Each structure stands twice: as C-alpha cells, then as structure tokens.
Amino acid sequence: MVGRSLITATVAEIRRDVGAARSRDPAALDVGIVEILAAWPGVQAVLAHRVAHALHRGRVPLVPRVIATAARAVTGIEIHPAARIGPGLFIDHGMGVVIGETAEVGADVTIYQGVTLGGTGFQTGKRHPTVQDNVTIGSGAKLLGPIVVGHGSKVGANTVVIHDVPPNCTVVGNPGHPVRVEGRRVEGPDTDWVHLPDPIADAIKGLSLRIAALERAAQGEHASGEAPEAPPAQAAGNGAAGEADSRAGPTGPVNRAIGPNPAGG
Ligand SMILES: CC(C)(COP(=O)(O)OP(=O)(O)OC[C@H]1O[C@@H](n2cnc3c(N)ncnc32)[C@H](O)[C@@H]1OP(=O)(O)O)[C@@H](O)C(=O)NCCC(=O)NCCS
Image (tube, rainbow, N blue to C red):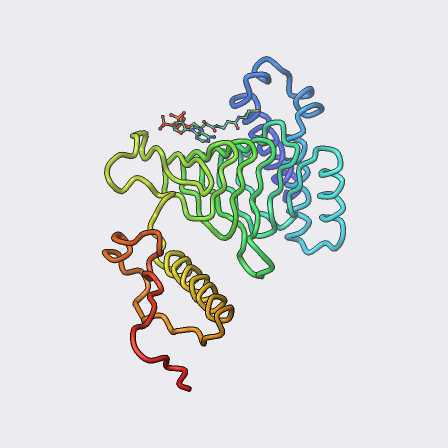
C-alpha cells in the first residue's frame, strides 16, 4: 500500500518536473518525456535531488551525497541533499547552479544557469536563501544569506541579492534593488537605493583626510625642526562646513594654531 502511494507520488512529481520544462522552455515544447529526461540537465538534477533528499531525510548515510556528487558531475548543477525544493522547479541550461544546504525553494520556481543560492560566510544554521513560489532567477544571479525572495518576484541576470525581496518585485543590479513593484516602475525621490547616504563611510573618509593633513603638518614641522601643532577639534560630518570647504573633507581643514607653541621650550 505504502509502496503504491510512493510510486504514484513519484510519478506525479516526475510529470510535474517534466511539465515545468515543457511550459517554461520554448525549446522543450514539442519534445517527448523520454527525450526531456535524457537530455535536459536541469530536469535530471532536480529528479536526482528528489531521490537524494528522500534518502537524506531517511537518515541514510553517504548515499545522498554520492547521488548529489554524481548529479553534479553529469549536469554541472550542485544541490545539497538537505536543500528543500518545492514542486515544479525548472533549472534551464543549469551549468554552474549551486543550491546550498539550508536553501528553501518554493513551487514553480525557474532558475537559469550560473545561479547561486549561497551563504555569506562560515556561519552555521539557516544561512541560505528562501525563495518563495513562482520566482524567476536570471542567469548568473547570486542570492546570498538567509534572505527571503517574495513570491512572484524576478531577479535579473547577474544581480547580487543580499537583502529580502518583497513579493512581485523585479530586482536588478549589484547590490540588487527593485526597479518594478507589482509591475509598476519605481519612481519618486526615494528610488535610488544604490547611492544611499553612508554617515559612517563619510566619517571614516573625513578622519583619513585629517590624518593625512596631520602627517603633512608633522613632516613640515620635522623638516623645519619644530614640533607639530595640533589641529582644532571638530565634529565629523559637519555638513555645512564640509560644504563650504569640501576639499578639506567633512572634518574641516587642519588649521595652524595661533599663539605660543604648546610643545613648550
Ligand atoms: C529582470 C528581468 C527578469 C526582466 O524583468 P521585467 O519585470 O520584465 O523588467 P523589465 O524588462 O521591464 O526591466 C526593468 C528594468 O530593469 C532593467 N533590467 C532588466 N534586466 C536587467 C539586468 N539583468 N541587469 C540590470 N538591469 C536590468 C531594464 O533595463 C529596465 O530598466 P528601466 O526601468 O530603466 O526601463 C530580465 O531582464 C532578466 O534579467 N531575466 C533573466 C533572463 C535570463 O537569465 N535568461 C537566460 C537565458 S539563457
């Protein structure tokens, strides 16, 4: 009884995975199921993963990894046996796709070649992306970290996504930023997600300008045999003053002190 239901479920899964190739790859429209099974690496990799994942969940040692490695050698697609893949995943062309251990992929997702669903470092636990239903991920896109890509969204080719993507968005670029939300072009004063102000970077830039000025002052004093004079203390990131003297950086110029040399003598 259990055997029969398992066979029925497996056949249904194979049909859905092959159907995904037929409906989303124009080249597969008139191709028979046997030819797709024999010649579509994306379909082969997904089916191999379904076997490896079932064995992994059944705590079978070694075999799931061997299946995943063999599938990778044949298709160029690497899917960790623990990754949770929903029904109807279609990987088009496939070569160079990597899907990490804690990645979760919803139903009817389309992935093109060179896509990575990866982690950002050596952290443990949930560290790979969650991709919800009906998402399309363009070739070469990198989705990094435990982010969530909302259902129905599209990720442009070569996009690098490191933050959550809301549902029904199109994200492109590096870093990935939305250019369409619910099919509408993103417009208005807050649409430049790439060039956001960065006060910490501004402060660091100001400090390095200040250090450079101090070094120049110290070298000058050293050459003339006098002790260097301290620059006046100013707050970092002083917008108005920085505006007035932008060449000196956000911390302002290093002025020569007036009065007796504080080094004494
Ligand atoms: C992003 C993508 C899914 C298109 O989505 P869409 O919702 O139809 O959006 P549009 O085509 O209207 O493009 C939206 C904007 O993003 C830009 N854009 C599209 N794809 C882009 C990409 N990969 N990188 C950078 N910008 C991109 C468009 O120029 C457009 O800019 P605009 O707002 O200034 O006009 C598609 O361009 C893409 O990259 N698909 C992947 C296809 C692929 O990998 N094929 C491999 C086949 S082998």
